[in-house]
Structure formats: structure tokens, C-alpha cells
Length: 425
Ligand code: UDX
Image 1: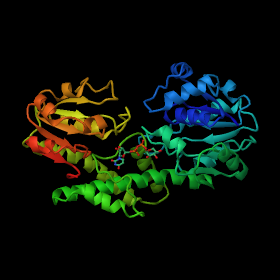
Image 2 (image 1 turned 90 degrees about the horizontal axis):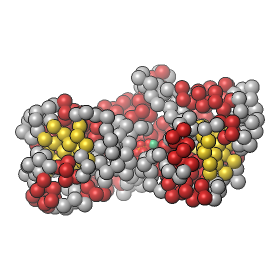
Image 3 (image 1 turned 180 degrees about the vertical axis):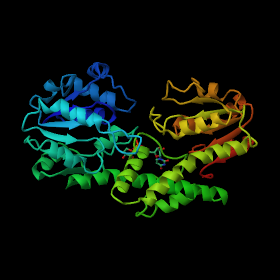
């Protein structure tokens, strides 16, 4: 088994370090946040992610994992150092690499010659090559191993990847890195830096395009009285299309799709290429969010001023507390801008920076006095709500279900106006 140092213990770093410890490697996690190191060392995971904490605690007991603030200690005798630092987006749509730059500065002085550097952060085209040049005077090999983890299922995605991608100019380093994943049943593709970088960006962009496509088809289905759930299921039976990522909703969000799709458009135009399909998908995604506001306006008689609206679900999807680029937050801001009074509830989101959006502590509290209820994320607890109980709390029984999760026919039968973005299954 290998000695693995993991720098950057956010979303990807936490999952990667705990996942490798599960596989039996000796892992040491390093971060600049004392709070994060303290809580992880005590078996507490500072992110909302099912299953991570149990696995961490098992590995702490077996001494398969430890955490430190000191990069020198982390790098000592490390066979591999994984860099899992954020690569956020600059205002111009390019990737901000300053976290990666400072992590590289941090490791340079203590790096041992045999240690293989593995980059996990999402890297813009050309970054791998540039880092290769920067470390020219060092013997260290560099590998780019992009992650494909989804929030809410990150540990399961680490354990069951569809593929493992390794980009490098050293075949040997790539093979040694692939050996770390022994015990995980997935095909391995060893390729160049650029190919691995574009696989990551293009995969996210394609998924975003697929969702924007089904959201537009869902709009057509809605306007023609066609059941989109049946349409999506019929489409998904074609193995070339696949049934996944065909659920219509209020648009895609999160810390990846919006950022990665804009960065890819920016990179392409710097290389004299217009990604018109992806640009159209980004525009269609804005349309999907605006349609929710239009539907709310229609349901409430054409004017939102002083109307009381409840939003259930604020994160960008269910099973996460992440509100970054969340369609629910975007829709909430637009409704407030039109003069509506909003209350919201999300099982995982416990605090908000927004002053104008009241965060309730329960579904019923959020629904009290509401003239319209909008379901924005597909939490199971929302799908299981009893319409009679909810309508007793509301001033008027109007519902927009943007995730098509309210299967109980009473929602439609007992409401004054009921709109499901995906028709009725
Ligand atoms: C995504 C990629 O899936 C993952 O491989 C990559 O590593 C990181 O980015 P994530 O952003 O966590 O993962 O969320 P994902 O589950 O992909 O959903 C992205 C957005 O698409 C969410 O807003 C979700 O609600 C939306 N979505 C997803 C749909 O609207 N319909 C679908 O069918 C699937």
C-alpha cells in the first residue's frame, strides 16, 4: 500500500483522502484551515456528504488516516501528493489558479524526488503542461487525475467510478497512480494532459447540454399537454441516449456545471472556436430559471408584489447543502425583485446570507399563509408531503412542482392551480 498526502480538504480532498484510506493506503490530509484539521482529526467531516463520516471514523481507529497543518510532515516519505485545491472562475470566465499556485509553492521546498504529484482539481486546458514546465528542474512526475464526484453521492462515486482518467507525459507515473485504485472495478484510460483536461470539461459540459435539452423539450411538452416523464423514459431506452440526466427541472447549478461550462466557452474562444451548442445550453439554462418566475407570475394573477410565496429546497439539488449557483436562489432573488415576500425551507441549508429571504425551520412553518408553494429540489421528504396538511397551512392552494416529485394525485385534485414542469407521470 502507498503513503498518500492529500492537500486541500474541501469537497474533493475529503472524499479522496477518506476513499484512499478505505482502500488500505496510509493517508495524511493537509489543509490551511486549523478548524478543518481539528474537526477531521476528531472524526467530524465539515461537509454535508452521506457516509463520509462513518468511513473517516473507521480509518481513524485503524490509523489509516491522519491530518496535519504542516506540509513538511505531510510530504515526508509520501509516494504520492494529491492536490485537491479549488480552481474557481475569474470574472472573465477563465479559471482562477491562485490556490493551485500557492499549493505548488507550498510543496516545492519539502517535495521528495520520488514523490509523484497528482493533480485532482479541475484544470483548464494547458495547465498540466504548464505545471510540467514549472517542475522541469525537479525529477517529480506529474499526473492529472480528474474527479467525477457528484455532491450528495461523492463517496459512492469514488467507490464506483465509470472510469479512471490519468493524464501524464510519464507512462510509468500514470501506471503507478492507477495502482492506487486497486480494489475499484473501473476501466483506466492513460492519456496526455490535454486529453485528460478536455475529457473532464467536455464531460461536464455535455451533461449540462443534455439537461438543458430535456428542459427545453419539457417546456414544449408542457405547452402541448404531453407527459414529459413518459417522453424522457422513452428516450432513455435508447442506449445511445441513456436514461440518466434526463430529469427536467428548474435548471442546472452547483459549483461545477456553471463554472466549467463558462470556462470551456472562454478557453474555446481563446482558441478561435465558438462552442455554440454549449453557449445555447447556458442560455437555455437561464431560460429554465426565468420560466419558473413566469409561471409563478401567471399563477398569481400577473403581479407578484406583496404576494406570499414559499420555496421548498434552496441548495442546487437534493441531498446537499450547497447553494452555490443554485437555481432556487436565483429564482428566489427574481421573485423578491418583483416584490414577492418569500419564506423557504431546505432540510440541509441551515443559514443564509440573504436578508430578504426568511429561512423557516420546518415545511409547515415555511408554508404558513403562502399563496403559492414552489418545489425547487427533489428531497424525498418533499415528495412524501401530505397535500391536505400543507394546504391547511397555506392561504391559497397553488403549487408549482419544478422537479415532478409530487406523485400524490391529491396535489392536483385539491389545489386551485397545480403546475408540474414535467407534466404528470
Ligand atoms: C457534477 C458532475 O455530475 C460530476 O461528475 C462532476 O465531478 C461535478 O459536477 P454535481 O455538480 O455535484 O456533479 O451535480 P449533478 O448531480 O451533476 O447535478 C448538476 C445539476 O444538474 C444540479 O443542479 C441538478 O439538479 C441538475 N440535474 C441533474 C437536472 O436538472 N436533471 C438531471 O437529470 C440531473
